[in-house]
Image 1 (tube, helix red, strand yellow):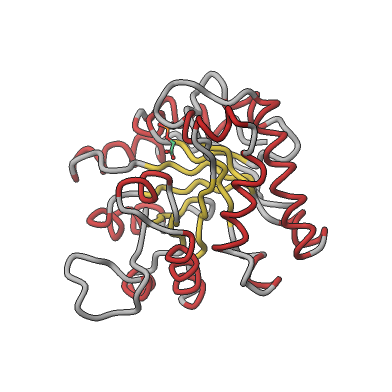
Image 2 (cartoon, rainbow, N blue to C red):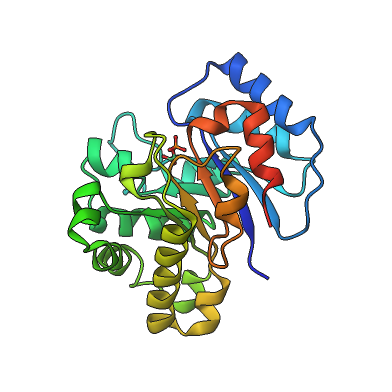
Length: 253
Ligand code: PGA
């Protein structure tokens, strides 16, 4: 059974103290989870060690980085490598969030390098794909996301591909309060799964968790997660409010 995942993407929010409170508010709820449920907190770099130690006793909870650099090590002032993340016990890293693609010009090729460096260090990439509004309006979203997968992931072996978590995040739905309908999400997730299936076979495709991201809220999570190919969410704004994120975790199927 593939993993159903509620992943919080805190982005560049929270002071250290606020981060501690938010985490403890979620953890103290002691939500009853099934073995195939996972909760992942993608927190700012300075909070990773603290987050990892907070979740250490919780088998279904994990810390994630929001990014890493596409070089192994060296003279790249201010950057953080996959090896550094591994050395502090981080097991997940978001790769290719649309904000990184847009504000930091991250290309599909650069993201392929990041994916490789993460996998080398046994860090699971949470790989983001998704189209802008103009692409959606032109009706070319399917081929657009297919190219993103092709250029950043499809050099991987089938075994490596099985270790990827995908997040479909239509850019027009991120932080806008405009959510894709459950039907739109399902349609794209089924497309992504079929694209993976064509390349790697149905068994690999059936095992990859595909999260939906883009204005997932306490009041729409259950409907989104109920779709066959939607395996949870990557949640920005609503993950900063403990009560809301708790409801979203409880909506996992
Ligand atoms: P949002 O962000 O939930 O605030 O739309 C999602 C994301 O960017 O991961």
